[in-house]
Length: 207
Ligand code: AMP
Image 1 (cartoon, rainbow, N blue to C red):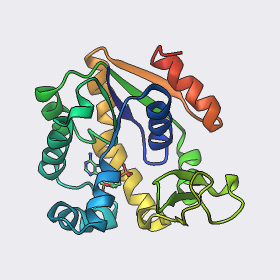
Image 2 (cartoon, rainbow, N blue to C red):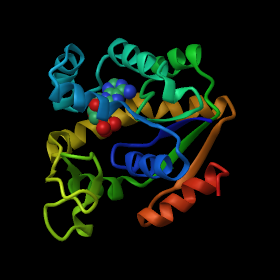
Image 3 (cartoon, helix red, strand yellow):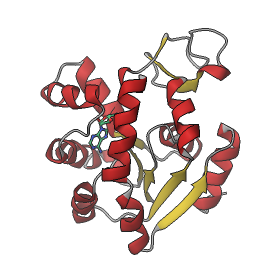
């Protein structure tokens, strides 16, 4: 099953996609994670992406599309995948349609005020990439692997505002795009991580 996760930054796409991957064995393809790794490894793609990410802007379509095409051709993607953070523009969605059939697009629906609180409190593990909210943490160590937790540069307040504007302008139209194709489902993800995961499974008819 080829699944697209839609939702504003901080809606919980990454958390729910990781959970679904661990539970059902479907690989999670996170373009944000791929860019962060590329930046750490100082690859040409990473160098191109960094300035856009630092501002909270989208990386140009052609850079993202080339990276995703390469990734989806790999062996582990041949029986389905969860796209987390891609597509983010109508152009990306149209290019994706040329190389893949999307079975379902899941809209992770969360009101703006919840998003802002989640992004401000989000911490990421430098070692395993797990994401947590500070309200769930005892200290600065990853509960899963003990790695050091950090705040993403683009989760700082000035960048968050721009990311939410970019989402509204460029990415939210994808809700209508996938609704028009008859593959859109919605999960209300305002609850706890466990409650939200149940809503995700119900929406995907996987429970
Ligand atoms: P994320 O981890 O999904 O929030 O992505 C972090 C940042 O990576 C975004 O704010 C963008 O700058 C960039 N990025 C990730 N995915 C895409 C995409 N599909 N298109 C353009 N930029 C992206």
